[in-house]
Length: 430
Image 1: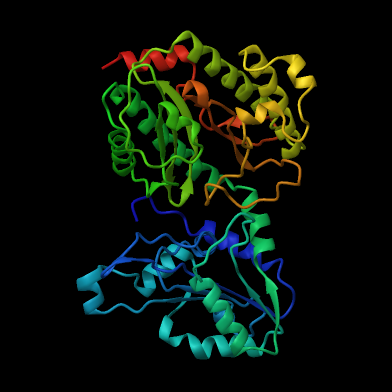
Image 2 (image 1 turned 180 degrees about the vertical axis):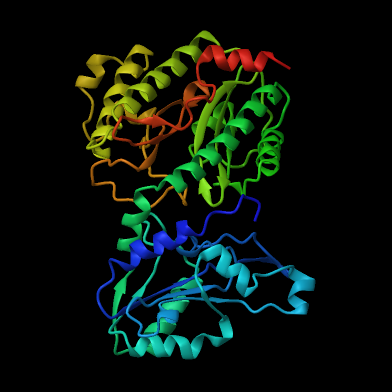
């Protein structure tokens, strides 16, 4: 791992909080992510299951966690199964966890090789009536590829057909929704690295640079600051590309007079930042660009002020539409009369602002969380309004990461350049 070691008490606490909510005489099982083949004997870089990492901190493939809080043998109430290494594995693929290293990372005393799991699991199941299985339950997630977790769950259901089965996700997602002090510090680290990368690009961007060159600068800064890499594939969108919400080609030349829209975030210890900024390629905003930029910035500030304990995301969405609609009228994109006569099923603002403004943030950039419950202290969310004027080839999005607290919203990106004067000043310094 690149990041500084996390105190294993963090993972022990998470496991204990999870176990408290299991019904009597139950066990819970968690499995690592797959290694996904790229080509030949190559795999895509391995990224651990967020849920498994949250509970044990192990960053290795073919890992299984067994929690059995009512097991009569105290040594088997928390058990970790890991891949047994060999000289050949070490030569070809490098070092793997020893049992002692796995204990140190996770805080779990009982560690077995994966090949020893069969008896230990069957014994634990004899004392249990219920088995909790995990699955990724993000509503927008759709995959045609069967995951290791899905295959594992089928296997367990087949091995123990007479047991009752429950879902771990509702318990885990409620726990992950409220960030601990450790998690907040990890998110702050991800934001700090993201800030360094953004400031680096402000000095690098100029007409003639290609979007992929700018991406390389960002990723260079990530690497030298111990980030895992990107929290998500970065958007480096110049000119009309900024009007494509999920533009990731990053292969066009940046031209004088255009705006460059960034949407990127460093991932540190699997926790991701998520920042959007929009800057002038030549270092100076035009008057029109300034007007649109300030409209988005005013909206960002107004929305952030409302991100308080007890507020609903639905209300923030409604407010964002009201604010943006007013700004669009001021920008001359339509009139108040046209708004009064618009089709309520297809309001005019949707041509220029077509996405939501908040999502939860944490181990996943679009983190788990119930959008229908009020904001609570410890939640971390994005705030990201935008205006996209395709006919002008102009897209502006600004995004900060906000910690909800009892004392009001805390902007984790408060020291990121965002005001027009800041942006232009940084870009003028070579």
